[in-house]
Picture 1 (cartoon, rainbow, N blue to C red):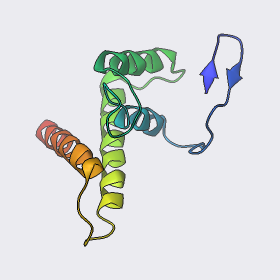
Picture 2: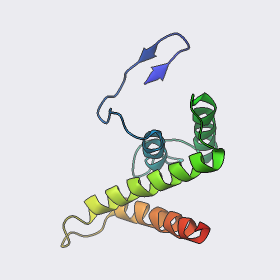
Picture 3: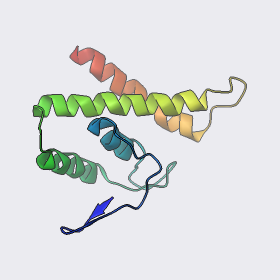
Length: 117
């Protein structure tokens, strides 16, 4: 959705639904890259941080910032796992660019979440 301060416009309803807020944020972050490689969606790390910060500011019922950040990271891991599950659906298929992009991201995130306890 796009919001111009007065009205909201729906531009893509493919994944619309009543889901945890963190899942939408995670999907947006998971599929964006600095130069659009693999996913074709461009967003810098600074833009991702700004997006996450502004969504938090706009939340009507705010969890703690720590809980908010963890919710997003867990939802992000879920999104990575869903993509990897799709990539591994055919065990005879060669692992391609998408797998090679998402696997290291999922692995690093899982390791950091485990380390945090």
